[in-house]
Amino acid sequence: MNHVDTHNEKILLQRVAEGDQESYRLLYKKYWDQMFANALHFTKSPELAKDLTQEIFLKIWMLRARLKEVENFESFLYRTAKNMIVDELRRLLRIKSHQEFLYAYFQENSQTSLNNTELKELAEKVEQAISQLPGQMQKAFRLSRFEGLTHEQIASQMGISKVTSQNYIARSLIVIRKFLSANQIETLPILLAALIF
Image (cartoon, rainbow, N blue to C red; front, side, top):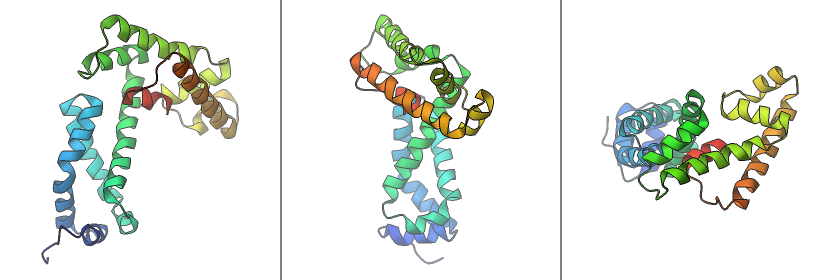
């Protein structure tokens, strides 16, 4: 293969889109450190961050045909990474009780100055925000965020339409955000963002 001009990212992306593995390797090398640091910032786990970074680049390879139309690859990469990281945090939320996971997450976050009592109170505030939702909305929200069900699956399980499920989740998010804002919880870590966005 001819020498790849790594300074002309558009050409590099075109070659990756055409399936050129050497161009993909150059792209991978250029952005690996950024994506690993990004994943580590959100997950607080080097092992999980490494796994997620590999998954992110695998996803980019799978989506390579779309790269010809990408105007800003870095933004595209960060958007892809954010979605995958949020999905992984939601998956972890479903494995443990969300209060347990929130508490463990904040404990491991060296950037927070919260003490154990405050961490517990924050987790309880999140649960309180969810618990004050009307019955059907709360059920739909828990099925979506804690069990990972799609709108189609929620609709089937609850005997409602897909549109109703979508409306329940949208209204739940508005109510929960207002509740947290009223309780002076303005700056949300990625874990909470995974829950309520």
